[in-house]
Image (cartoon, rainbow, N blue to C red; front, side):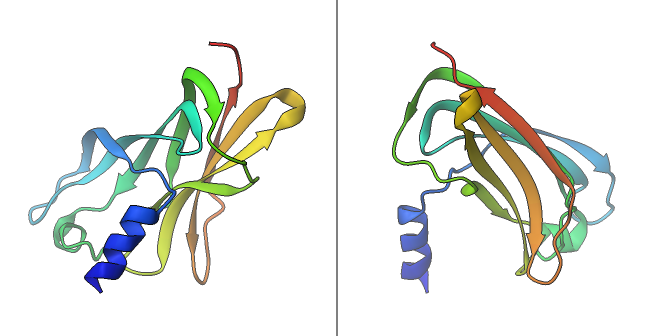
Length: 147
C-alpha cells in the first residue's frame, strides 16, 4: 500500500500546492477552526504560469482528523510569471491540480484549456463527487505574451 502511494506521488503529473496563507472563518471549541486557505501551484506542463487558489477547509474534530467534507466554493487566479514554454502536448480539459476535499468521494480540481485562436490559456476550478458534483466554479485566463 505504501509503495502504491509513493509511486503515485513520484509519477503524478499534477502540480503540488504550496500554502501561502489562511484566515479563520468560524471558531471551533475542539479541533482547528474553519478557514479559507490560499495556495499557489505552478502548471506542471506550462513553464511561466502560476495559479493561486483560495478554498474553504472545514475544521472541528472531524476536519482535524481529515474526515469532514470541505465546501465546494473556490476562487482561482492564474498569472504569467515568466516566459511561457510548453513542456509537452496540451490536452483540453487536462487536470493541472487535484486535491481531495472529503474522505473518499469528493475532490476539487483545476483543469486547463488552450484557446489557440486567442493565444490564451484558460483555467477552471470545480468540485466533483462520484454521485453528484457542484456547478460552483471559478475561471481565469492567461494571455500568452512575450516575457
